[in-house]
Image (tube, rainbow, N blue to C red):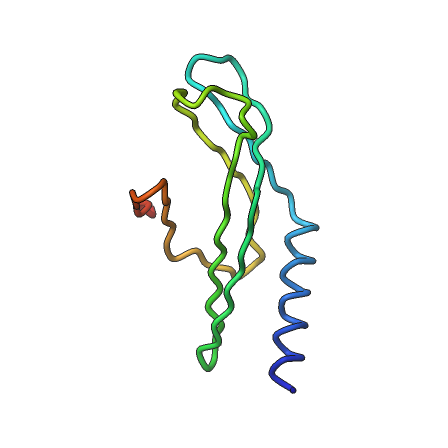
Length: 105
């Protein structure tokens, strides 16, 4: 019961921090000037406790809600701020069966 309460409180804090932080999501096409809004259709947060720290995995499904044709090359830009002390240690992109790991600098 204590663990469930701690996890619930932790998740509430994460959602509060996310809602109060600045975030911008846009979609750009190579043949169109400017950008249009992007959308997050699904978000799944997986929290795994590991003793002294907690690993969080956030899975987002992005969409342009058919603003562009399906043959367009699109660039998705998602700008956001992390809370102080937060670390991103890897990023992955799934498109269909294709998986690409981001290069972190």
